[in-house]
Image 1 (spheres, rainbow, N blue to C red):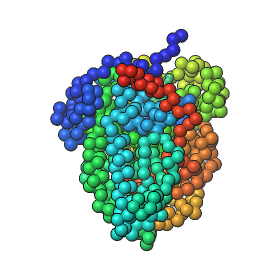
Image 2: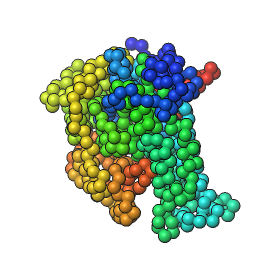
Image 3: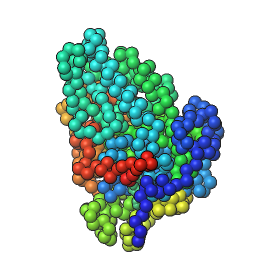
Image 4: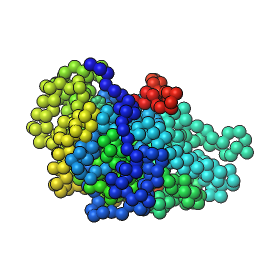
Length: 556
Ligand code: ADP
């Protein structure tokens, strides 16, 4: 059999419509469209007026990811295309890719096969420059802090207690801890600093959770950058730079419009990771799409323990909407890995391992139900799946009364997602009892314990001495009535990446609790999760090139 075409080859052969046509069909007025070339545009959200009721939101989540790949973005795009084929007014809302995973190991974030958003080359590289703007705003703040200290430090900032870090949109472990200001008095005050990846920046979180320019400015002003020698918090508003930082983001803040291979309108905007940040595209994007369409299909990163949990407890709560349906993407390959099969043996039929690994899926189904929403499993088909394996999954779903649809969008585009679309439409007809899992007024310990027990399926949570001190300080300042944003490995429901399947009886350790008052949440670091990833031994970059006509080569 012929080698299947790569994602990039399929995308390059596609006939893409001018973005004006896509915008027109989506009901976006001409004066709301700011074109970035022929196939990309920004939408001015202030020029979009709602036509009737806001769209229902379909959230796509997944089982705990494995190196076998699940295809969450692929299914998200394919589902939107299927709904489009059924003549529904639908838009897809995705996150912007980060160059960290693009150059590293995970790959792009534009879907795959015949379920992709295009132009994928642009979207996966610099797109419309939003990540640049966010990086720059973040680093401008670092520069303002260092300059403030250099110019006399009127605010009495303790250089050892600055919590604001610099960022870069790459995986660069060498920059995790650095010393800045070396070289004598003219170069500033030496101090320890460090870099996070841009998608973990609080600016990214603020960007994704702000509901207007005013809100964006107010949230930036509320960011805590560090503490004084008297241990009092220092806010961005004390430095008086919230205006400048908001200015740097003014164009980036407008959602980006592109299209799927089948011409379904897609908004791609904001891109925090779901393991070290809140994992959802911007509220501006989702709400703009909701005004334009009847159904918005969106995704949240990694499994339902991460992206979906934060979608429900942070994003939906902030934006004031609810997910009307949740799709859980699973593959037979990944379920076999959860059942103990190594990556090299995934092509062999193994129903026993599959049935063991399905426990992971079972937990994600239970979790979504805990939020009051009935999930639909999308079984993303790979050519290596055997009939016996397919049957085993279908039987399990029947026994456990879970909705399931087989999807083949990677091979067939929207057509391969029609069965899933029908199931989603059926669920959209029903009202659900969605509610976030905790009240923000509960104590930090209680909120974290709720997530650990109800979402991860763990026994309990413990806090290190450092975390306890930080919690005491957060309570002292009255910052504790905020949702928590867990930073946890995506591979396991626990904080140990190697515990696959459905681990039980484990205790989660909270290492640090960091206030992010601009974003409006408290980050809880578990395990040894890093906010600046490293590159693997063989990064994806080694396969990449550009041909002499200027086209990308080897970009997946
Ligand atoms: P996720 O969003 O879960 O990270 P993606 O949708 O980005 O996953 O897909 C990851 C990779 O897997 C992409 O390169 C895509 O082409 C590939 N892929 C997805 N679904 C399938 C499938 N059914 N068969 C083969 N490859 C697939």
